[in-house]
Length: 267
Image (cartoon, one colour):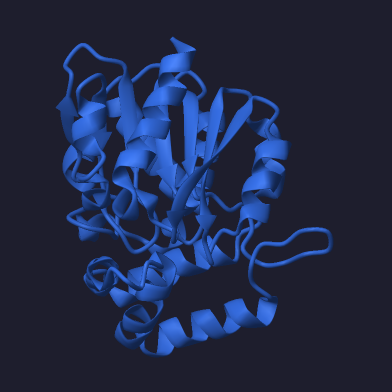
């Protein structure tokens, strides 16, 4: 199996530096990290990739059976780490990839030694004593709209997810990223993202973890960041002075600085 081609793997940065794996969220690809790569690449060896079904991955390798659960995406991560023989890597996961990273670290603990969760959410649907940001009816409507008119959904939802309405170019970029994804593959990934409850998985995290949240985020409100931080005793919570769900695009300098500061403290 050609994992590098399958997942469009690219390696860059300091050749002898510690390894940092950058994992994108739903509807995106590795290009979402481009604004933080220069700062991180000065000290770290960076591994960028696309999940199967996203970006320039090999779409022929996609299957609904595998990618209808987050474990399928976590298996992509594990197989990339095995292919590159990574040990004790730092896994930086945006949005749903934060929880994918939790699963990957549990599956292959020798491969991942640190987690950085950017705007994470273990459950998007509100529950008793838990605020995920959405009611069950909200998620049902979101998925129904996505499945009936994916391009229309993307044009409407991407700017909301991105936030920063005074910078419409950011919303347009996320819209274009969503629209470039195959609608059927996006439908499967969306269900795996928005219907999964990964709260119990947080108990398995024993590695040093940075929980990175934005001051305003309609997808992962600050109550979620506080919940994740409380559930992982080894975690550090940092709140960026940034809005929206994609700080690596809207506030790349602050995002890179927070990641670099956390990793420097571990050395």
